[in-house]
Length: 474
Ligand code: HEM
Image 1 (spheres, rainbow, N blue to C red):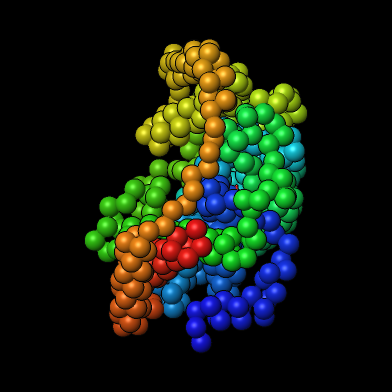
Image 2 (tube, rainbow, N blue to C red; image 1 turned 135 degrees about the vertical axis):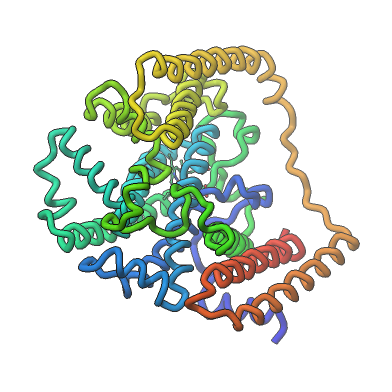
Protein backbone atom coordinates (compact mmCIF):
# COMPACT_ATOMS: atom_id res chain seq x y z
CA UNK A 1 0.00 0.00 0.00
CA UNK A 2 1.43 3.40 -0.91
CA UNK A 3 1.88 6.12 1.75
CA UNK A 4 -1.02 8.11 0.28
CA UNK A 5 -3.43 5.21 0.43
CA UNK A 6 -2.56 4.47 4.09
CA UNK A 7 -3.36 8.11 4.89
CA UNK A 8 -6.61 7.91 2.93
CA UNK A 9 -7.58 4.62 4.59
CA UNK A 10 -6.94 6.17 8.00
CA UNK A 11 -8.91 9.32 7.16
CA UNK A 12 -11.84 7.34 5.77
CA UNK A 13 -11.99 4.76 8.56
CA UNK A 14 -11.92 7.35 11.34
CA UNK A 15 -13.83 10.00 9.35
CA UNK A 16 -10.99 12.41 10.03
CA UNK A 17 -12.02 14.79 7.27
CA UNK A 18 -15.36 15.29 9.05
CA UNK A 19 -13.82 16.26 12.42
CA UNK A 20 -15.02 19.81 13.01
CA UNK A 21 -11.69 21.07 14.41
CA UNK A 22 -10.43 24.32 12.96
CA UNK A 23 -7.36 24.40 10.73
CA UNK A 24 -4.75 27.18 10.98
CA UNK A 25 -2.57 29.23 8.62
CA UNK A 26 0.93 27.91 7.94
CA UNK A 27 2.70 30.43 10.19
CA UNK A 28 0.98 28.88 13.23
CA UNK A 29 2.87 25.61 12.82
CA UNK A 30 5.51 26.83 15.21
CA UNK A 31 6.09 25.80 18.82
CA UNK A 32 4.86 29.11 20.31
CA UNK A 33 1.33 28.36 19.07
CA UNK A 34 1.42 24.83 20.53
CA UNK A 35 2.52 25.45 24.12
CA UNK A 36 -0.95 24.46 25.36
CA UNK A 37 -0.54 21.34 23.21
CA UNK A 38 2.67 20.48 25.11
CA UNK A 39 0.82 20.83 28.45
CA UNK A 40 -1.99 18.65 27.02
CA UNK A 41 0.46 15.97 25.86
CA UNK A 42 1.98 15.89 29.36
CA UNK A 43 -1.53 15.59 30.85
CA UNK A 44 -2.23 12.54 28.68
CA UNK A 45 1.10 10.97 29.63
CA UNK A 46 0.19 11.44 33.30
CA UNK A 47 -3.21 9.81 32.81
CA UNK A 48 -1.67 6.87 30.95
CA UNK A 49 1.16 6.12 33.37
CA UNK A 50 -1.06 6.87 36.40
CA UNK A 51 -3.67 4.34 35.28
CA UNK A 52 -0.98 1.68 34.76
CA UNK A 53 0.48 2.30 38.22
CA UNK A 54 -2.99 2.06 39.73
CA UNK A 55 -2.72 -1.68 39.04
CA UNK A 56 0.15 -1.98 41.52
CA UNK A 57 -0.13 0.84 44.07
CA UNK A 58 -1.54 -0.26 47.44
CA UNK A 59 -2.65 2.41 49.94
CA UNK A 60 -2.34 -0.23 52.68
CA UNK A 61 1.38 -0.44 51.96
CA UNK A 62 2.20 2.85 50.21
CA UNK A 63 6.00 2.99 50.52
CA UNK A 64 6.67 -0.70 49.94
CA UNK A 65 4.27 -0.96 47.01
CA UNK A 66 5.96 2.10 45.45
CA UNK A 67 9.35 0.42 45.88
CA UNK A 68 7.89 -2.77 44.40
CA UNK A 69 6.79 -0.81 41.31
CA UNK A 70 10.42 0.36 40.90
CA UNK A 71 12.17 -2.93 41.65
CA UNK A 72 9.78 -5.77 40.71
CA UNK A 73 7.25 -4.61 38.12
CA UNK A 74 8.36 -4.90 34.48
CA UNK A 75 9.00 -1.34 33.16
CA UNK A 76 7.83 -0.10 36.59
CA UNK A 77 10.80 2.20 37.25
CA UNK A 78 10.26 3.87 33.87
CA UNK A 79 6.55 4.33 34.66
CA UNK A 80 7.15 5.81 38.09
CA UNK A 81 10.05 8.11 37.27
CA UNK A 82 8.39 9.41 34.08
CA UNK A 83 5.13 9.99 35.99
CA UNK A 84 7.09 12.18 38.41
CA UNK A 85 8.93 14.05 35.65
CA UNK A 86 5.74 14.21 33.57
CA UNK A 87 4.24 16.26 36.40
CA UNK A 88 7.33 18.50 36.53
CA UNK A 89 7.28 19.10 32.78
CA UNK A 90 3.55 19.70 32.80
CA UNK A 91 3.95 22.34 35.52
CA UNK A 92 6.77 24.04 33.56
CA UNK A 93 4.73 23.86 30.35
CA UNK A 94 1.70 25.38 32.10
CA UNK A 95 3.85 28.24 33.43
CA UNK A 96 5.32 28.93 30.00
CA UNK A 97 1.92 28.62 28.27
CA UNK A 98 0.27 30.93 30.84
CA UNK A 99 3.05 33.53 30.51
CA UNK A 100 2.92 33.41 26.74
CA UNK A 101 -0.85 33.85 26.84
CA UNK A 102 -0.43 36.82 29.21
CA UNK A 103 2.19 38.54 27.06
CA UNK A 104 0.06 38.13 23.94
CA UNK A 105 -2.95 39.55 25.78
CA UNK A 106 -4.86 36.36 24.89
CA UNK A 107 -6.87 36.66 28.12
CA UNK A 108 -8.84 39.49 26.55
CA UNK A 109 -12.08 39.31 24.66
CA UNK A 110 -13.23 36.72 23.50
CA UNK A 111 -10.93 34.38 25.50
CA UNK A 112 -11.58 35.61 29.07
CA UNK A 113 -13.21 32.38 30.19
CA UNK A 114 -10.44 30.30 28.59
CA UNK A 115 -8.02 32.20 30.83
CA UNK A 116 -10.15 31.66 33.97
CA UNK A 117 -10.36 27.93 33.24
CA UNK A 118 -6.60 27.90 32.67
CA UNK A 119 -5.91 29.51 36.07
CA UNK A 120 -8.21 27.00 37.79
CA UNK A 121 -6.43 24.15 36.00
CA UNK A 122 -3.07 25.56 37.03
CA UNK A 123 -4.12 25.58 40.71
CA UNK A 124 -5.51 22.05 40.43
CA UNK A 125 -2.43 20.74 38.65
CA UNK A 126 -0.26 22.10 41.48
CA UNK A 127 -2.46 20.50 44.17
CA UNK A 128 -2.74 17.21 42.26
CA UNK A 129 1.05 17.07 41.98
CA UNK A 130 1.43 17.82 45.68
CA UNK A 131 -0.97 14.97 46.55
CA UNK A 132 0.78 12.58 44.12
CA UNK A 133 4.16 13.49 45.63
CA UNK A 134 2.82 12.62 49.09
CA UNK A 135 1.42 9.26 47.95
CA UNK A 136 4.80 7.53 47.81
CA UNK A 137 4.92 7.56 51.62
CA UNK A 138 8.64 8.46 51.66
CA UNK A 139 10.09 10.92 54.16
CA UNK A 140 9.51 13.91 51.85
CA UNK A 141 5.90 12.89 51.23
CA UNK A 142 5.32 12.48 54.97
CA UNK A 143 6.71 15.98 55.58
CA UNK A 144 4.48 17.32 52.80
CA UNK A 145 1.40 15.84 54.49
CA UNK A 146 2.39 17.53 57.77
CA UNK A 147 2.76 20.85 55.91
CA UNK A 148 -0.68 20.31 54.31
CA UNK A 149 -2.25 19.74 57.72
CA UNK A 150 -0.45 22.83 59.06
CA UNK A 151 -1.82 24.96 56.20
CA UNK A 152 -5.39 23.82 56.88
CA UNK A 153 -4.94 24.61 60.59
CA UNK A 154 -3.47 28.05 59.78
CA UNK A 155 -6.54 29.05 57.81
CA UNK A 156 -8.83 27.66 60.52
CA UNK A 157 -9.95 24.70 58.43
CA UNK A 158 -8.68 21.88 60.68
CA UNK A 159 -12.18 20.43 60.49
CA UNK A 160 -11.34 19.46 56.90
CA UNK A 161 -8.20 17.50 57.89
CA UNK A 162 -9.99 14.11 58.13
CA UNK A 163 -11.59 14.69 54.70
CA UNK A 164 -8.23 15.30 53.02
CA UNK A 165 -5.84 13.30 55.20
CA UNK A 166 -8.01 10.67 56.92
CA UNK A 167 -8.51 9.64 60.53
CA UNK A 168 -4.86 9.25 61.51
CA UNK A 169 -4.06 5.72 60.31
CA UNK A 170 -1.69 5.20 57.37
CA UNK A 171 -4.31 3.17 55.52
CA UNK A 172 -6.86 5.96 55.77
CA UNK A 173 -4.27 8.62 54.85
CA UNK A 174 -3.08 6.90 51.66
CA UNK A 175 -6.61 5.84 50.65
CA UNK A 176 -7.68 9.49 50.92
CA UNK A 177 -4.62 10.72 49.01
CA UNK A 178 -5.22 8.22 46.22
CA UNK A 179 -8.91 9.17 46.09
CA UNK A 180 -8.11 12.90 45.93
CA UNK A 181 -5.40 12.34 43.33
CA UNK A 182 -7.92 10.64 41.05
CA UNK A 183 -10.71 13.16 41.76
CA UNK A 184 -8.42 16.12 41.06
CA UNK A 185 -7.05 14.61 37.84
CA UNK A 186 -10.61 13.95 36.69
CA UNK A 187 -11.50 17.58 37.38
CA UNK A 188 -8.41 18.77 35.48
CA UNK A 189 -9.44 16.58 32.52
CA UNK A 190 -13.01 17.94 32.60
CA UNK A 191 -11.77 21.54 32.79
CA UNK A 192 -9.31 20.74 30.01
CA UNK A 193 -12.16 19.49 27.80
CA UNK A 194 -13.97 22.82 28.26
CA UNK A 195 -10.74 24.82 27.81
CA UNK A 196 -10.00 22.93 24.60
CA UNK A 197 -13.56 23.34 23.34
CA UNK A 198 -13.31 27.11 23.81
CA UNK A 199 -9.86 27.16 22.17
CA UNK A 200 -11.47 25.50 19.14
CA UNK A 201 -14.41 27.90 19.07
CA UNK A 202 -12.31 31.05 19.52
CA UNK A 203 -9.50 29.75 17.33
CA UNK A 204 -5.76 30.25 17.92
CA UNK A 205 -4.98 33.88 18.55
CA UNK A 206 -3.41 35.38 15.41
CA UNK A 207 -0.11 37.21 15.24
CA UNK A 208 -0.27 40.49 17.21
CA UNK A 209 0.90 42.58 14.25
CA UNK A 210 -1.79 41.05 12.09
CA UNK A 211 -4.37 42.00 14.74
CA UNK A 212 -2.94 45.57 14.84
CA UNK A 213 -2.36 44.96 18.58
CA UNK A 214 -6.07 45.30 19.32
CA UNK A 215 -8.57 42.86 20.87
CA UNK A 216 -10.65 41.00 19.86
CA UNK A 217 -7.97 39.20 17.87
CA UNK A 218 -9.63 36.38 15.97
CA UNK A 219 -9.02 34.55 12.74
CA UNK A 220 -12.02 34.71 10.42
CA UNK A 221 -13.27 31.20 9.71
CA UNK A 222 -13.33 32.03 5.97
CA UNK A 223 -9.68 33.22 5.99
CA UNK A 224 -8.21 31.87 2.73
CA UNK A 225 -4.93 30.93 4.47
CA UNK A 226 -6.68 28.35 6.68
CA UNK A 227 -6.35 24.80 5.39
CA UNK A 228 -8.37 21.84 6.76
CA UNK A 229 -7.45 20.34 10.15
CA UNK A 230 -6.74 16.94 8.57
CA UNK A 231 -3.93 16.11 7.87
CA UNK A 232 -1.77 19.14 8.77
CA UNK A 233 -2.92 19.82 12.35
CA UNK A 234 -3.18 16.11 13.10
CA UNK A 235 0.36 15.34 11.92
CA UNK A 236 1.87 18.36 13.69
CA UNK A 237 0.03 17.39 16.89
CA UNK A 238 1.52 13.88 16.71
CA UNK A 239 4.96 15.50 16.40
CA UNK A 240 4.31 17.70 19.46
CA UNK A 241 2.97 14.78 21.53
CA UNK A 242 5.90 12.46 20.75
CA UNK A 243 8.40 15.29 21.33
CA UNK A 244 6.87 16.01 24.76
CA UNK A 245 6.71 12.33 25.72
CA UNK A 246 10.30 11.82 24.56
CA UNK A 247 11.51 14.64 26.83
CA UNK A 248 9.40 13.35 29.75
CA UNK A 249 11.08 9.94 29.42
CA UNK A 250 14.57 11.21 28.72
CA UNK A 251 15.19 13.44 31.75
CA UNK A 252 14.43 10.96 34.59
CA UNK A 253 16.09 8.11 32.66
CA UNK A 254 19.36 10.06 32.47
CA UNK A 255 19.12 10.96 36.18
CA UNK A 256 18.38 7.32 37.08
CA UNK A 257 21.55 5.95 35.41
CA UNK A 258 23.59 4.09 38.07
CA UNK A 259 26.59 6.42 37.52
CA UNK A 260 24.46 9.51 38.20
CA UNK A 261 21.55 8.61 40.47
CA UNK A 262 23.41 9.01 43.78
CA UNK A 263 24.70 12.47 42.84
CA UNK A 264 21.25 13.92 42.01
CA UNK A 265 20.00 16.45 44.62
CA UNK A 266 16.98 15.00 46.43
CA UNK A 267 14.71 17.72 45.00
CA UNK A 268 15.24 16.36 41.49
CA UNK A 269 15.67 12.69 42.24
CA UNK A 270 13.77 10.48 39.78
CA UNK A 271 12.80 8.13 42.62
CA UNK A 272 11.21 8.60 46.07
CA UNK A 273 13.44 9.31 49.09
CA UNK A 274 14.01 6.96 52.06
CA UNK A 275 11.20 5.57 54.19
CA UNK A 276 10.30 7.87 57.14
CA UNK A 277 11.15 5.02 59.54
CA UNK A 278 14.64 4.37 58.08
CA UNK A 279 17.84 5.75 59.73
CA UNK A 280 18.61 7.82 56.56
CA UNK A 281 15.35 9.73 56.97
CA UNK A 282 16.84 11.96 59.68
CA UNK A 283 19.53 13.12 57.21
CA UNK A 284 17.02 14.42 54.67
CA UNK A 285 15.93 18.06 55.16
CA UNK A 286 12.15 18.53 55.00
CA UNK A 287 11.91 19.71 51.38
CA UNK A 288 8.62 20.24 49.56
CA UNK A 289 8.51 19.48 45.83
CA UNK A 290 10.49 22.17 43.93
CA UNK A 291 7.34 23.81 42.56
CA UNK A 292 6.25 24.64 46.14
CA UNK A 293 9.67 25.85 47.35
CA UNK A 294 8.47 29.47 47.24
CA UNK A 295 5.67 28.65 49.71
CA UNK A 296 8.16 26.88 51.91
CA UNK A 297 10.32 29.99 52.13
CA UNK A 298 7.22 32.08 52.77
CA UNK A 299 6.59 29.89 55.81
CA UNK A 300 10.02 31.00 57.15
CA UNK A 301 8.87 34.64 57.10
CA UNK A 302 8.10 36.59 60.24
CA UNK A 303 4.31 36.35 59.69
CA UNK A 304 1.62 33.88 60.77
CA UNK A 305 1.17 30.95 58.33
CA UNK A 306 -2.31 32.21 57.33
CA UNK A 307 -0.70 35.42 55.97
CA UNK A 308 1.97 33.41 54.13
CA UNK A 309 -0.70 31.23 52.49
CA UNK A 310 -2.79 34.27 51.53
CA UNK A 311 0.16 36.22 50.09
CA UNK A 312 1.82 33.23 48.44
CA UNK A 313 -1.21 31.48 46.97
CA UNK A 314 -4.70 32.87 47.54
CA UNK A 315 -4.17 36.54 46.60
CA UNK A 316 -2.07 35.78 43.45
CA UNK A 317 -4.73 33.26 42.34
CA UNK A 318 -7.57 35.74 42.83
CA UNK A 319 -5.59 38.44 40.98
CA UNK A 320 -4.96 36.03 38.10
CA UNK A 321 -8.62 35.06 37.89
CA UNK A 322 -9.88 38.65 37.78
CA UNK A 323 -7.23 39.95 35.34
CA UNK A 324 -9.48 39.69 32.24
CA UNK A 325 -12.26 41.53 34.04
CA UNK A 326 -10.20 44.44 35.34
CA UNK A 327 -8.02 44.90 32.26
CA UNK A 328 -10.83 45.36 29.75
CA UNK A 329 -9.28 47.75 27.25
CA UNK A 330 -8.39 46.52 23.79
CA UNK A 331 -4.60 46.87 24.01
CA UNK A 332 -2.77 43.59 23.33
CA UNK A 333 0.89 44.59 23.41
CA UNK A 334 2.38 43.97 26.90
CA UNK A 335 4.00 47.43 26.87
CA UNK A 336 0.56 48.99 26.33
CA UNK A 337 -0.45 47.35 29.64
CA UNK A 338 2.59 48.52 31.66
CA UNK A 339 1.11 48.21 35.17
CA UNK A 340 0.02 44.60 34.83
CA UNK A 341 3.15 43.62 32.89
CA UNK A 342 5.41 45.09 35.58
CA UNK A 343 3.30 43.39 38.27
CA UNK A 344 3.61 40.03 36.49
CA UNK A 345 7.37 40.35 36.08
CA UNK A 346 7.76 41.40 39.72
CA UNK A 347 5.62 38.46 40.89
CA UNK A 348 7.56 36.03 38.72
CA UNK A 349 10.89 37.35 40.00
CA UNK A 350 9.69 36.95 43.62
CA UNK A 351 8.59 33.41 42.82
CA UNK A 352 12.00 32.49 41.39
CA UNK A 353 13.93 34.27 44.19
CA UNK A 354 11.90 32.62 46.94
CA UNK A 355 12.21 29.19 45.31
CA UNK A 356 16.00 29.44 45.05
CA UNK A 357 16.18 30.78 48.61
CA UNK A 358 13.94 27.94 49.85
CA UNK A 359 16.21 25.37 48.18
CA UNK A 360 19.39 26.95 49.59
CA UNK A 361 18.24 27.73 53.13
CA UNK A 362 15.36 25.39 53.97
CA UNK A 363 13.74 26.21 57.30
CA UNK A 364 16.09 29.16 58.09
CA UNK A 365 13.94 32.02 59.52
CA UNK A 366 13.84 35.13 57.34
CA UNK A 367 14.97 38.41 58.92
CA UNK A 368 12.90 41.51 57.97
CA UNK A 369 15.96 43.25 56.40
CA UNK A 370 16.60 40.26 54.08
CA UNK A 371 12.95 40.26 53.20
CA UNK A 372 13.08 43.91 52.11
CA UNK A 373 16.23 43.21 50.07
CA UNK A 374 14.45 40.47 48.15
CA UNK A 375 11.13 42.25 47.74
CA UNK A 376 11.97 45.86 46.92
CA UNK A 377 14.69 45.79 44.18
CA UNK A 378 12.70 43.57 41.74
CA UNK A 379 9.68 45.80 42.29
CA UNK A 380 11.61 49.01 41.48
CA UNK A 381 13.53 47.50 38.56
CA UNK A 382 10.43 45.92 36.95
CA UNK A 383 8.19 48.94 37.28
CA UNK A 384 10.94 51.42 36.30
CA UNK A 385 12.10 49.28 33.37
CA UNK A 386 8.64 48.48 32.01
CA UNK A 387 7.41 52.10 32.19
CA UNK A 388 10.59 53.24 30.40
CA UNK A 389 10.00 50.64 27.67
CA UNK A 390 6.34 51.65 27.57
CA UNK A 391 7.22 55.24 26.63
CA UNK A 392 9.78 54.08 24.05
CA UNK A 393 7.25 51.66 22.54
CA UNK A 394 4.59 54.36 22.31
CA UNK A 395 6.86 56.50 20.13
CA UNK A 396 7.69 53.67 17.71
CA UNK A 397 4.27 51.96 17.66
CA UNK A 398 2.74 53.83 14.68
CA UNK A 399 5.67 52.79 12.46
CA UNK A 400 5.44 49.13 13.56
CA UNK A 401 1.67 48.97 13.13
CA UNK A 402 1.73 50.39 9.63
CA UNK A 403 4.49 48.04 8.47
CA UNK A 404 3.12 45.25 6.28
CA UNK A 405 3.17 41.92 8.23
CA UNK A 406 3.48 40.04 4.90
CA UNK A 407 3.32 36.33 5.61
CA UNK A 408 6.52 34.61 4.51
CA UNK A 409 5.65 32.23 1.74
CA UNK A 410 6.84 28.72 2.39
CA UNK A 411 9.37 28.03 -0.31
CA UNK A 412 10.58 24.72 -1.49
CA UNK A 413 13.63 23.79 -3.50
CA UNK A 414 14.95 20.52 -4.83
CA UNK A 415 18.17 20.48 -2.75
CA UNK A 416 16.31 21.02 0.52
CA UNK A 417 13.76 18.35 -0.38
CA UNK A 418 16.50 15.84 -1.15
CA UNK A 419 18.31 16.67 2.12
CA UNK A 420 15.06 16.28 4.04
CA UNK A 421 14.34 12.88 2.55
CA UNK A 422 17.90 11.67 3.28
CA UNK A 423 17.58 12.96 6.85
CA UNK A 424 14.24 11.16 7.20
CA UNK A 425 15.82 7.86 6.08
CA UNK A 426 18.78 8.26 8.49
CA UNK A 427 16.48 9.11 11.43
CA UNK A 428 14.28 6.08 10.67
CA UNK A 429 17.30 3.77 10.36
CA UNK A 430 18.72 4.94 13.73
CA UNK A 431 15.26 4.44 15.31
CA UNK A 432 15.06 0.86 13.97
CA UNK A 433 18.54 0.05 15.36
CA UNK A 434 17.59 1.47 18.79
CA UNK A 435 14.34 -0.49 18.73
CA UNK A 436 16.17 -3.75 17.99
CA UNK A 437 18.78 -3.09 20.68
CA UNK A 438 16.07 -2.29 23.24
CA UNK A 439 14.69 -5.84 22.95
CA UNK A 440 17.83 -7.16 24.65
CA UNK A 441 17.21 -5.05 27.80
CA UNK A 442 15.77 -6.51 30.99
CA UNK A 443 12.41 -4.84 31.78
CA UNK A 444 13.04 -4.94 35.54
CA UNK A 445 16.75 -4.24 36.05
CA UNK A 446 17.50 -2.02 33.01
CA UNK A 447 14.84 0.67 33.69
CA UNK A 448 17.00 3.74 32.89
CA UNK A 449 18.29 2.24 29.63
CA UNK A 450 14.79 1.23 28.60
CA UNK A 451 13.55 4.75 29.41
CA UNK A 452 16.41 6.20 27.34
CA UNK A 453 15.71 3.94 24.37
CA UNK A 454 11.97 4.71 24.44
CA UNK A 455 12.72 8.40 24.71
CA UNK A 456 15.16 8.18 21.76
CA UNK A 457 12.49 6.34 19.75
CA UNK A 458 9.86 8.97 20.53
CA UNK A 459 12.22 11.87 19.80
CA UNK A 460 13.37 10.30 16.52
CA UNK A 461 9.76 9.59 15.60
CA UNK A 462 8.84 13.21 16.29
CA UNK A 463 11.85 14.33 14.19
CA UNK A 464 10.55 12.12 11.37
CA UNK A 465 7.06 13.61 11.72
CA UNK A 466 8.38 17.18 11.55
CA UNK A 467 10.59 16.28 8.58
CA UNK A 468 7.58 14.75 6.85
CA UNK A 469 5.51 17.81 7.73
CA UNK A 470 8.10 20.16 6.26
CA UNK A 471 8.66 17.95 3.20
CA UNK A 472 5.04 17.19 2.35
CA UNK A 473 2.64 19.56 4.07
CA UNK A 474 4.20 22.99 4.60
C1 HEM B 1 -3.41 21.86 32.35
C2 HEM B 1 -3.07 23.02 31.88
C3 HEM B 1 -3.41 23.55 30.50
C4 HEM B 1 -3.63 22.88 29.32
C5 HEM B 1 -3.56 21.38 29.11
C6 HEM B 1 -3.95 23.86 28.31
C7 HEM B 1 -4.22 23.59 26.97
C8 HEM B 1 -4.48 24.54 26.00
C9 HEM B 1 -4.61 24.28 24.59
C10 HEM B 1 -4.47 22.90 23.93
C11 HEM B 1 -4.85 25.47 23.96
C12 HEM B 1 -5.03 25.68 22.44
C13 HEM B 1 -3.96 26.47 21.77
C14 HEM B 1 -2.57 26.50 22.34
O1 HEM B 1 -1.88 25.47 22.33
O2 HEM B 1 -2.16 27.59 22.84
C15 HEM B 1 -4.88 26.50 24.97
C16 HEM B 1 -5.10 27.84 24.74
C17 HEM B 1 -5.23 28.81 25.72
N1 HEM B 1 -4.97 28.63 27.08
FE1 HEM B 1 -4.46 26.90 27.96
N2 HEM B 1 -3.93 25.12 28.89
C18 HEM B 1 -3.59 24.98 30.22
C19 HEM B 1 -3.40 25.98 31.15
C20 HEM B 1 -3.66 27.31 30.90
C21 HEM B 1 -3.39 28.39 31.83
C22 HEM B 1 -2.70 28.20 33.18
C23 HEM B 1 -3.85 29.54 31.24
C24 HEM B 1 -3.84 30.94 31.78
C25 HEM B 1 -3.26 31.34 32.85
C26 HEM B 1 -4.39 29.20 29.94
C27 HEM B 1 -4.99 30.08 29.07
C28 HEM B 1 -5.21 29.83 27.73
C29 HEM B 1 -5.66 30.82 26.74
C30 HEM B 1 -6.07 32.27 27.04
C31 HEM B 1 -5.64 30.19 25.49
C32 HEM B 1 -5.91 30.83 24.11
C33 HEM B 1 -4.54 31.19 23.55
C34 HEM B 1 -4.52 31.53 22.08
O3 HEM B 1 -5.55 31.42 21.42
O4 HEM B 1 -3.41 31.90 21.60
N3 HEM B 1 -4.25 27.85 29.76
N4 HEM B 1 -4.64 25.91 26.21
